Length: 352
Image 1: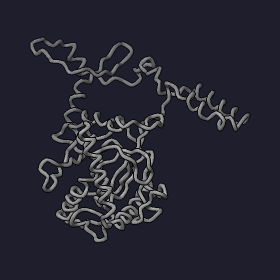
Image 2: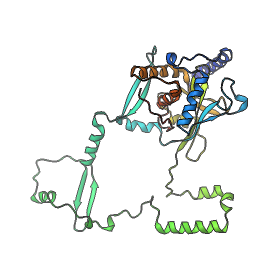
Image 3: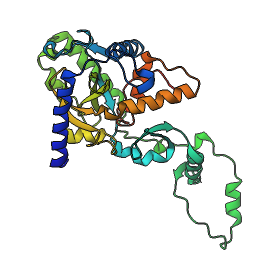
Image 4: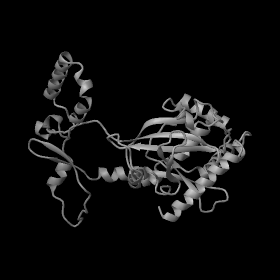
């Protein structure tokens, strides 16, 4: 981020805070006309979200930072330990298997949101499957039959084909009894050997009978020493995601706090690895959480109302009646464009 951009953001933050102090809180619903919410509608939408998705909860935060236009026990929404299995760059290798909807914002020729959908354009998956199957070859020897996968090669049609090859192709299907034990994988690092499992169980039983308090006194040491090369537990980044009400923009605002595979807080540059390249350092920046006083990454809400208005209009055009209590489900659906690899819960499905 350039120094000029940083200065611009600082000036804008100061301006917004000043305007918020003198601007009255929105009290008349403009949900359908402008895609914004009143504080009461924000609470209504949050109640439905926490009811349908129990991973989301209402939080009160620091009492000294409470705002008077929201209930004390419902200052913001929070979901914890949301998994993030891969970085955004890894999605580039899967782009052929997705379809995108582009939402052109009204009055903004250069601004648009891309909403990904799962799909199979032009039979890509079937073509890839046929290509993989073409490299499958079964070779037979005296005692064993081995199945291997090879890259497709160019066949020389000018080379004569022997009768032996034809006989091999028309031969009987190999019997499963022909498979020998030497074809089996002997040293699979992800497999727990039976004798090792038995010993571990016996040791655990003995330890628990002799000294139950050992685990509590040396829990951290045992936890670190038990992690080996053959550990089958999937360790991944996780995020705490919160949603606050932005009085200036009159829309929800999303905040992110990330942890690495060892539960250590992520640095800002690491968080941006999980942000869409089109939005990192542009619509996502670092600031202090309004109810916690801790530095979070947040998605700037300047375009939220425009996008929500577009989605609400599409719902109406498709014969569906938009409901203000379902606002956050629709909101979280388009926010996934910015953080596509963070798998938070918004179970209620929408067709826009």
